[in-house]
Image 1: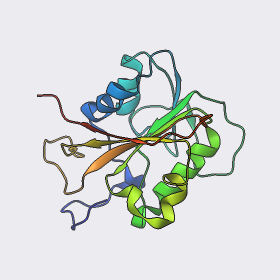
Image 2 (image 1 turned 30 degrees about the vertical axis):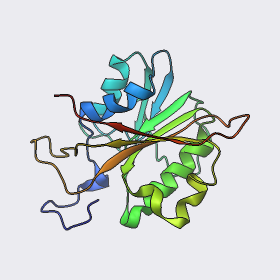
Image 3 (image 1 turned 120 degrees about the vertical axis):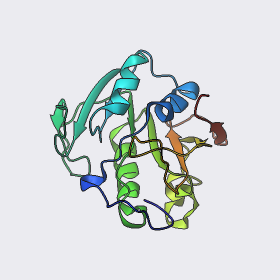
Length: 188
């Protein structure tokens, strides 16, 4: 999760809950009102609550229940193909060692959703050549929204050492267009 060693133990299933402002930063550029959104690593629904408050119909799933019940227990990385089709997938997935789990999550999300996909990942996630298929070679890649403020994963106001960004893919375009680089910050 971090470039330098953190003072925190890794949480079970990498349950790091996203502060509301970080989800709002995505919605500033990609509104969800009227969309049917799958929050596929829902944790305790912090992101799902923000999506709902902004007009989305949200379906929640995760590999287990924490404090809040999900619509379904679903291992997103499984080969299950009995899932509903949604307009969008929006989530903060587990990253795994060297972001390998996050890569699998991105690949599954793009395979499972022909609409919009937005994943909250490390700001340098798009830098690896092994991920070129997700970005430079992917006509669906629309934007990177860099969060210029760091997220407090513990909910105590203390931030980690890693920067984060939203990566957004859309439906396959008729004509190629360059991806956009956008910036968002925590409201004052």
